[in-house]
Every structure is written in structure tokens, then in C-alpha cells.
Image 1 (cartoon, rainbow, N blue to C red):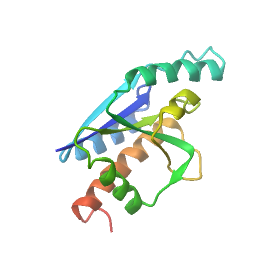
Image 2: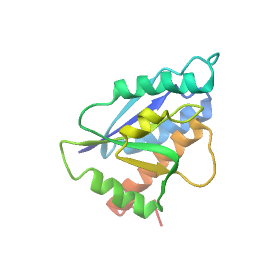
Image 3: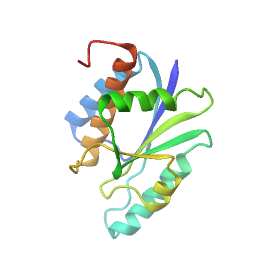
Image 4: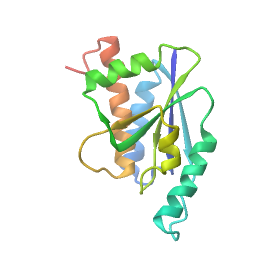
Length: 155
């Protein structure tokens, strides 16, 4: 069973995002070993740059040496679902390295985290709330898995 990690800032607070994320995580875990690591949100009273830096430090501390860091970033490369599936397949070829998909908080990812990235991926040209971005990423990971397994989910 192949492995992947999801590293994100904060818990999903809205019930429907929690349910949607749980739905796709459950589906993914039928064929993948998925580890989800959440780091604490930055203090909302702090200026955005300081909050981002604090969250970034926690994200960096949670990364492992074998992680292939894939940052979800609006300035990253956009992929079709089939291209994303091929990317996931390539990222998991090496059994000792684990792709780690990183999602920032309300203000995105700190530059220090982006510098650690092997790859930056954009979910599309629009901006999404970070809770929605997490669910969209999970759905696309599940879709990629279905494409790789030739499951009828993606048509």
C-alpha cells in the first residue's frame, strides 16, 4: 500500500467541510496509507505576516526528512486531473519517500515553507477558503487514485 501525507494548518471548523473531508479520507484509505497532520492555527490577533510565520514554523517542524513536500499554492502549477494522477504516481514510485501535501491557513503558506517545497501545485485560478481547498485536494487525490486504478469514478 502506497503512502501519502496531508499536512495542514488548523482543524476544519465547519461541519460540512469536516464531513466532506472525512468522506474522501475514508475512500482514500481503502487503497492508500494516509497520514493527516494538523498544526495549530496562528493567533488571530497577530498581523497576517506574523501569523503566517508562526504557522510556517509549525509546518516546517512537522515535516519529515523523507517527505516530498508538495505545497498547495496559488502561484503553483495547475494540473488536469489526469496530469495530477500521473504526478501522484511519479511521486510514489520511490518507496522510501512520501509525498506530503501542505495546505496553509487563512493567509496561505509562509515563504519558508514554500522554499522547502519540491513542488507547488495550484488548485485553479480562483482563490478558495483553506477549508474548501483541503476538501478539493482530498477529492483530487481520490480522483487520482481512481484514475490510476482505472475506476469508473473519473470519466
